[in-house]
Length: 281
Image (cartoon, rainbow, N blue to C red; front, side, top):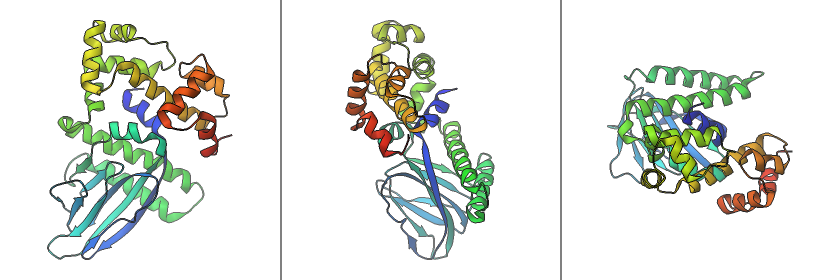
């Protein structure tokens, strides 16, 4: 697994909702509770996207795709008074994972219709739309898998096309030294890592590694490691019926109490309570 694989396998995409929208003047997506990343494809006409925290609107042509990071709101307006049509939807995420999503997602992904990487995205959207509309046996699972694929394609296309606009996490993962340490952490999350052993993975001195890591990530190596151990813990609690002690050991904690304390400090909820809230046995 690479770092993006580790990230996407941890954040847990809970589902996707989708609709075909006809715009005559302007359209504001309905506000819903939860943590969402919104996306859209201009299937007819032209439109302008005005994000709540952006100074200027983004002009969208037929075939353009956009994806907004979780927490960003927007308004779509027609261009020049002509009607437009959009395939609009949202990815739904576990609300406890807002921090890693904020770390990873760029504020806006915009892929123009004429770009080569738009072709696989468009095909996936067409398949997703067909499955949502069909309601045939297995369509619910197919929709989840296609939603995963759509998200991966959008993120991968953005990283390849706009490396300078990537988030700090992506830039750090691309650094040959810090990326090596990050990959080691994610590959062996249960290992008893220290700053010195992580520096060795990066091929750096302890002090130089700690300084560079904090400069790129805005937190210390062990602070980052603790957070990701908890995020990995949420995945294990949600997707398995392993004992809490086994989950604690799987993410690098010999003591249930230490795991419980760190989990509640990072996520604001106890491990057992979290498991009950997501309906896992």
